[in-house]
Image (cartoon, rainbow, N blue to C red; front, side, top):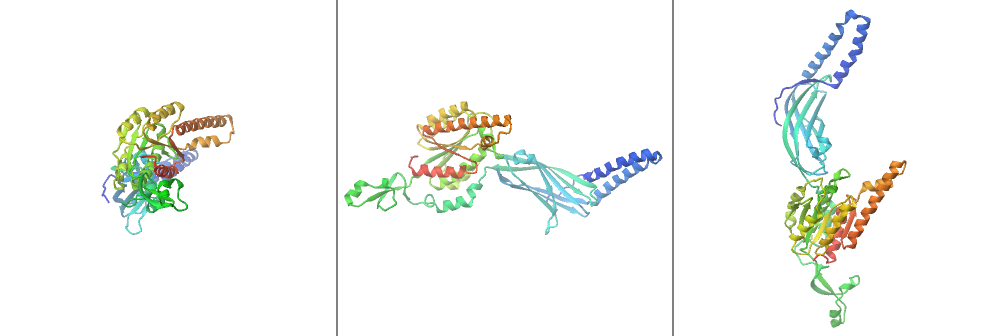
Length: 446
């Protein structure tokens, strides 16, 4: 632990303040009943002040004090902040600590500690689990340590400037989940370098037709030559280009269950991109607001997944409306072959949605588009709310109108040939993976 030798100011505790306040009515009674004994009130106050100083001195001195913060954390996942302290002699009734940090770490930028003795090492420590709310780099700027004497009247307090940084990354807990890892281990595609027979576009071999096979795979010409039913086996489609495009505008920065929509979308996209890499496809990330922010080269190896994670961490939060026309035109100009474009976006009014639909319409003519949006749970709660008064009724009607307009926009996208995934934030990643495999197996990308 780092040694610290700061000035140790003595401060009264809350208990001392209450004790001093209790002498106020006593002083009034003395002044009314025996004015000549007024000296007793300041004498009693002096005794209290002396007790405060003695109590603080009995608490002992700080020998060492250290703050440990993680170098990396993930948005929405606990990050342990640890404070350690060692004292030389004295007796303490309570040891507290506090940290000041960037609000993106959550908890209003403040952490409070209750330090307790470590049973084996002879020092005191305390842990605070911060929950980062936004990506980026968070600074831990200042720390406080305060320890109270045995009477609980006086305390010593020290403060120290800190220069610690925590890099907050996108949430990858779905990628590490046992369910996904088990699925990838047992999946048919993407595990080892081999030619995989089954669905796909490239002919691999003929096999004798068996009950349960898709009848559309029957090769009637070959069956006629051999007077027996034969089915085509194609090589599974691989090396497709998958682009995950993120709208980083105002609507996507609104929170859903305590976290911005864009962070929910990034977590789902990284999970699906990991599956796509394991399935032999190539993945790129594209982010935009009023202009394109990020466009990564295509990654074709799961070992380079960290590049996608770093690019996703750099997506910024903005309070402006996105420019779909410029962004999607830029994306189209950079794609040299037909690709699957998975667009994460949201909309709050029909006018903004109209511009989005127009831009997506031009994209559909060259590429396969999958539109992904998170269900607006707040609208659903307003619609289901019991109309107890006229204000609640008006809010429910407005929410129902917005939900209806939202459904109209999604239906227009479907009629244009755009696949749509709309689900709650905690299901969006798995539904996206299901839709990806459906598209891949339908041979619609290449």
